[in-house]
Every structure is written in C-alpha cells, then in structure tokens.
Image (tube, rainbow over all chains, first blue to last red; front, side, top):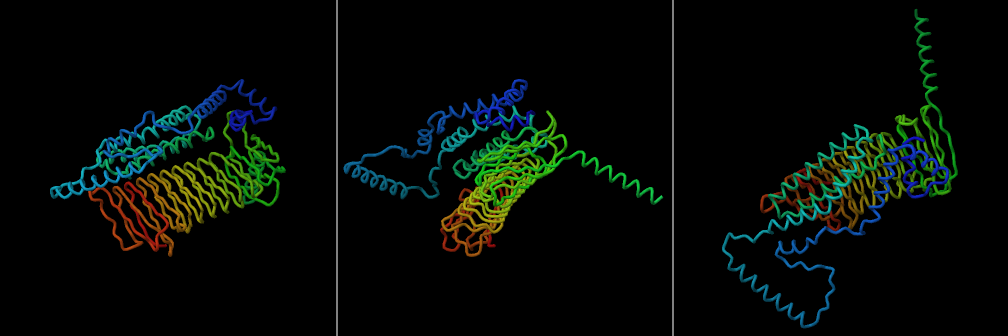
Length: 213
Length: 293
C-alpha cells in the first residue's frame, strides 16, 4: 500500500473503525514508513489535545475587572443571581435619582466646547488583548502544524496559501494601526477579530489538505 | 506524395490511439448501499461527476491511468473510494462518474479537480485545492471549500457554507442559512432569498443581489473588498453600514451617509420599506454600494 492510501485510512485506523484485514495492512505499512508513523503520531497527539481541551476556553487570566476599571463603568457580571429586597430596591432608586441629579448639574455647568471624556485607551487595549488571547494561540499552533506539513503540499498550493496569509496579515496590521489612532471604535475590534478568524480558518483548512495537493 | 502523407498521418493517429488505449483503463463498478448512505470519495485528480439517482446503489464508471488502482468498499451504511498510484508517484488525472442515492451524504476531497454534483438532496461536503466545484440542485446541507479553485452553486441548499482563499464563489439560488468566506476571491450572489446570510472577505469583492426574509439578517464584513448590495424590489430591511475609510453610496433611500463626529469613518442607518430584517455591513476601506435590483 502507498502512503496516499494509508493517509485515506488513517482516520478510521485511529478510530478503530477498520476491519481486521485493513488494520493489518495499515500496520504493515506503518512498520516500514516513518512518514506515515509521524502522521499517525500527529493525529493521536491532536486527538489527545482535543480530548484534554476544556469545553470552553477562557483567557489565561480574568481580564474583565481590568476592562471595567478602564472603562470606568460598573459593568455587572451576568452570571450572578441577585436576591433583592424592597430596601435594596428603594436604595437603588434613591441612588439613581441622586446620580442623575448630579449628572444633570455637572452637564449644566460644563464649559462650552468641552467634550465628554473618551473611553480610555487602556479599555481598547484590553479588548485587543482579549482578541489576541482568544485567537493568537490557535493561529500560532496551526501555523506550526502547517510548517511541519509544508513539504507535503504542492508548491502552487503553498504559494496560494502564503499569498492569502500575507493579505490577511496586512489587514490585521492595518486594523491594529487604526485602533492605535482610533481606540474607541468597536467596529475596528470586530474587524480585527474577523481578520484573525480568516487566518485561523485558512490555516486550519490548509493543514487538513491531502498530501501532495 | 499525397498517399504517403495520408498513410503517415493514419499511422500516427493509430499509434496515438493505441498508446492512449494502452495507458488507460476503464472502471465500471456497482454496489448496493443504503438510501441515506455516507459516500466518501477521495484522492481523485481530474474530473468527478456525482449524480443522485433514485436507487439504493452506487455505480462508478470512469477512466484511469493504467498504472493507477481504483479502490472501493461499500456496505449498507456507505461506500468509500479512492485512487492509488505506484508508491510515491503522483496520482494521475482520471475522469469519474459516480451515481449515488439522492438522499446520500457525499464527501469529496481532492487536490486539483473539477467536481460536478447534481441531484443530491442529502448532504454534500466538497473540498478541492484548485479546479472547480459546481453544484446543481438543493441539497439539505452543502459545505464547499476551495483554495484557488472556484465554487458555483445553482440551487437552494437549506444550509450552505462556501469558502475559498482566492477562488470565486457564485450562488444562483437561495438558502435559509448561508455563509460565504473568501480572502481575495469574488463573491457573487444572484437573486437569493436568505433567512440568514453572512459574507466575509479580506480583499475580495462582493456582488450580492438578495432579499432577506422577514426578520432575517444579512451581514457583511470586509477589509478592503467592494460590497455591492442590491436589495430585491419590495424587500424591507433596517440597514446599518459603517466603514473606517470606505465610501458609502446609498441608492436605497434618500438618507445620506454621515461622517463620524471624530472624522474617522462613515456611517449610514436607514430603513428600507417597513424594515424588520437586518442588513449590517462593516468595511475597513472597501467601498459600499447600495441599490435596488
């Protein structure tokens, strides 16, 4: 059997879904082919990583308090269940009334031409860090996986992928540069995320291509 | 002189035919499979035509190079087929026609190939690097992925995802839930009705003429592609556009786009008809053109 046919059967082999004859054939080939053994090891390692991965991914540290501080707002975390009594409601209403009155008074006495303070740059920096934390590790893992499979792909495919990755990286860089000068723009954060999503998707699809295509 | 030339030409022709005949062999295999089988076709280079038919069997005909081997296994729940060549050798181009139960779920993964699919109402998962994917009909689910190959769909898959790197993506039809993603390819959608449509590109242009369903949504994201959206006559939607550097040309309503107060970017929020459906467009520096079909 050739490496191509083994590659077609490897998924099923790893899953234990091959019949006895096919399993024997695959194992006979694996015994004498380092490349396919490496592919098998890579698949098993990937499956092990997937199995060990948490069902939901959280950033390595909780960035929410930092974002709240930076925005200067008290953004309530939604996960908490509140048990509110009449006294608390009354206190909240009183607080809101006082707060509104204070805001109105402040606005009335604001000098002409003054502008409301912009969201501090740290807030967007935190959002960008969130985007980075969400996407960069995956993009880096996939780029490393692609680098290890690079020799198996056709030069024309590599050229197409690299050209597209350059286009995506330029878009990401432009979004980042724009964020540096326009830090209050949530659309830019979304466009940055979209760039990363494109990159991850392209890398993922490339790592799944059949060898020599 | 003329006779000798004719003889020479005939001899060359015969030699070419003989050599061609010697270099290729025919495939003709049939197997029984279930009506909702899972069919996996892989490693085929050249042209693959998959046609759904109203039988519980799979039939494969085609031509492959003499030194290639065609492998197929089939059972009640599905079939699997692929081409294999001499160890280490390239897979040579082949042509295949595969008939499968129309309700089957068909998975095709190849390198450079033309895949043509018609008459499937089950699921399709098609993957090429170069070449062309062409789907006619209305499968329940369609996932089509290409690198520099093109994707053409004529029909109304209920669920549709089409992705390319540089290849063009074209839909003539509709979908309840459609997603189009490309880096620099052109996305063209003609006359579609969507419950939910999502369009993403980095530099690829998008030419979309569509109607969102009542309470449906169309979402566009691009970095530098031009978005040319034509809404169907009579379509109602709330349209929300924002760009960082791109221009907005509103041919849908009399509302003019506004420059953001800080001078960075343009925005447009406008209601077409009675509103209801949501059209959201976000572009970094690509132009946005809005109009009626």
